[in-house]
Amino acid sequence: MASAIMLTGCGADTATNEDASVTVMVVQSSDQLSVDKMVWTKQVEKDCGCTIKWQRVDANSFQQQRSTILASESVPDISISGFGYDEAQKFPYFEDLAQHLDDMPNVKEYLEQIPTARTLTENENGNMYVLRSYMGKGYAVPAQYLMINKTWLDKLGLDLPTTWDEYEQVLEAFKTKDPNGNGKQDEIPLDLRKLDTGFFGWWNPFLLLNSLGITTHFGSGPASQGIYVSNGTVGNFMIDARFRQVIEYLHTLMDRNLIPKDALTKDISKYSAELNSDGKTPLVGSAFGWGASDFGTTFEDQYVALPTLKANASDPESNLTWDASGDTYSFTGGISMSAKTKNKEAAYKIINSLFSEKLSVQQFRGSIPEWVTDEGNHRYKVSERFWDTSTMGTREAIEGGFAGWIPDNVEWEDEINIDRQKKMNDAYLDDYANIDATRDVMPANARPTSEQLTTLSNNNTAIFDYAITKIATWIVKGGIDGEWDEYAKQLKALGIDDNVAIWQEAYDKATKN
Ligand code: MG
Image (cartoon, rainbow, N blue to C red; front, side, top):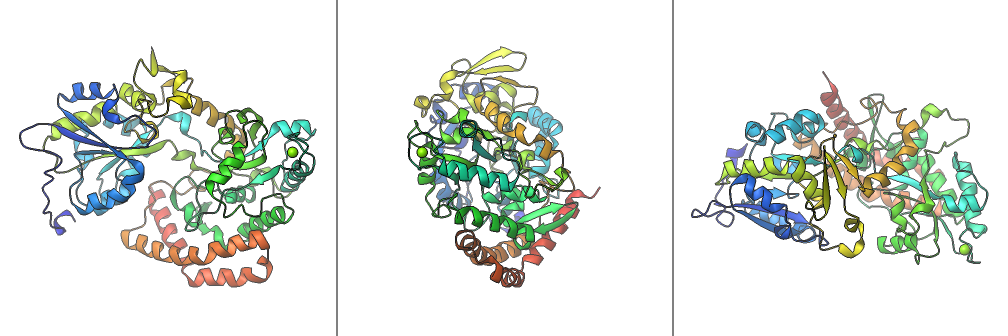
């Protein structure tokens, strides 16, 4: 495959003959200190016995630069959060790291201890051109929940709702009974993020499918295309009667002014502003999101996660599920190495150093001892100022964009995000118990062939162009009764059943033996 493409570039900008340096490009978010100024990088340099040229690239501009770099046939010696599995499969520029695990004992141990890390990026020939990072067991959560203002419920003398009907009644009370106590009927009972147009993204209201026995996986994988698995059988919820039920329910809520009429199209910035309100008087009663801190730190304590609601009071508990993305949310960022790197031995040492416990911890939450205290015996304490918004731009951490492995025996203190996630996630433990991790979830290594991926991509463009407008119209204006059959027929004509067959094949291949 590699030989079929003529390589003419020589990577002259990333390494020169006269020095033995290694260029490490790090794609960073704009609110982080530039990587070359982070103190922990000195240890990596010491470990490799080489000179490292740290190269910071802004995440926003990298979106455009990525294709230019790939077209130039010259990728940096090492890229952190630069390239993913698909790109590394398509472009033959990357070193097969699976061949060099003996040069990287930390990586070798990582892949042994966390098998999913291997299946995530190993292709069918056993090549690994990219390694994903692992944030640790504290992030084995879906990071998407339905939250509700418990302070308002208490004030109104209401219990946590357990069914769609009860939830609607609670929202009605939020609307009419002034739970924020400012004498105005200004409450937004349920706020929704706008719908993505070409896929189902994070924090979308179709998480309610979990009320009806469809286990969602919106954090990764083909759930973004409507694909789900139930007892080993793949389906697409976009043409499932249960999806229709969720749309009808959302329409009922919107029709009763329990969801703002502009919710599905309004800017994310306006949505966030509503969640955060003025920092004194909360406005929003309920929302789908990452966690209670979505509402701002002053309101954070008021919100709790709602266990999966029953669609009907008579539904069996065993029918309830919740988003299963906890199997992949811990995996993030990633690292790749150019096959043309001149100083390969040093590059392996760099990767090995980054995947050590100490360097992983420091990349994630900052240099020791300035930002993180090493308490010994795999215990680390994050400094208070790491969480202070005023330190943004000076934090010595590349956070979720890091290249490393935080082993499951690491214990954190004041890792506030883990504590935040645990609080939310614990609400769903009974719901998770109804999910069969193999029979109800698309495995991370289910991969259609490149030809099939093209078919999926083409079909989905047409499917979503047509469907999302319909779905949004039904939620806002209703009318699904007279149009559903025609819509389902149309999606079949656009190849939705072919997509299901492709994913069934990928599922079967990934789960056999
Ligand atoms: Mg009010």
